[in-house]
Length: 452
Image 1 (cartoon, rainbow, N blue to C red):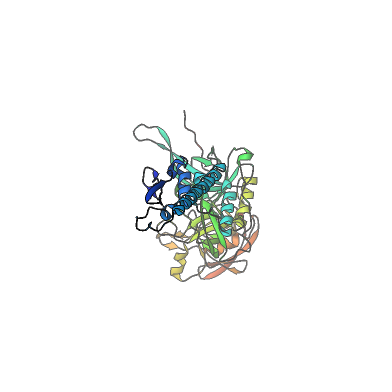
Image 2: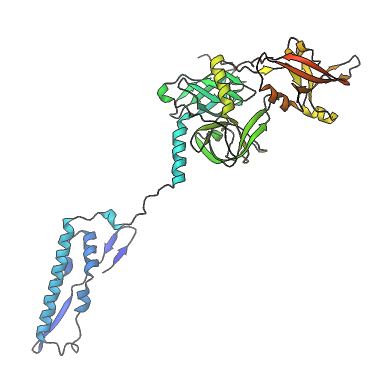
């Protein structure tokens, strides 16, 4: 008995009826048992079960032998053999009836692989992603453009990025460069519901902006805010964002460095104490959260170091301890109160060429704290020659070697605080007392609406 497997059906070959011989006196009489195929059920899988289980061993034992082999067979032996064959068939029938009591499942005839189980580390990452994804939003930056042919005003996407839900009042935190120059901003939540957003305020110096949407509290999932204090190089981190418009993408890596200083593309004020990571950060990840292994927010992805514009394994995030104070000020006052001197600075390379360390003053606006203190700006004389202004070398006794040193010192001061500035003027030095003023906020993006 065997089975033939074809693309159309599974066909079982019917068995041949066993034939027995006996000798009585001088005459041979053939004893033929009924075909077992008549006793088998019509269910193909049961028939195959019986045929395989029984194997028809009796058929091979009792096939007809030639006359020479049966010359010495006693008449009774043939009858005994027939009886034994009948008993075997009866046993097979009993086995068949027992299988009918409990029907076989066709799926039981096939073996299946055991279900795949996540490892402990994989399960932790999956839980972290599922727990924090509802807090990450997709931000679309739209600008109004007039069609040159139809003169119709169209809303054209000019950029996109990520952000995260800060609280149940609908405040969204993102990078300032994500919304810079926007005339229309939309925020899409995890449930794919899109809301128009208004700008509450921003801090270009730290590349932080706060938006607000009118969404139900049940649709908002504020992110779990942690701390950036105590971070260590080698610590595992996770970035969630919308790179290249692919919403809610998770990448992981480690902290590659701490206390990095990155240039601010908006102004000359550097962003200090940035977190360096090798987690893949691509265009569209800006404004997204950087999480630790506990799922707590430790930074906001803001920049990458790359010559191609895509991830090269060197990304930077603003630490959450810096962001928290800025966001709280923006929500409460609509702006960030930061002390300023009121001067325009020359690039550091200008003094490096002269072999002088410090900060060269290019301009001191009238009425600014610098002008009130008597700081001199660079100018041209009556012959058109450049006369260098004051060069700031020390503040409160601390050496100022470049613009980064100046801004780092100002971050520790408050508005209205009086400081002592030492400047190089001509061939000598001068000490001036200066009262720090308040930084004037940049104009907010204007939200425009198209006529129906």
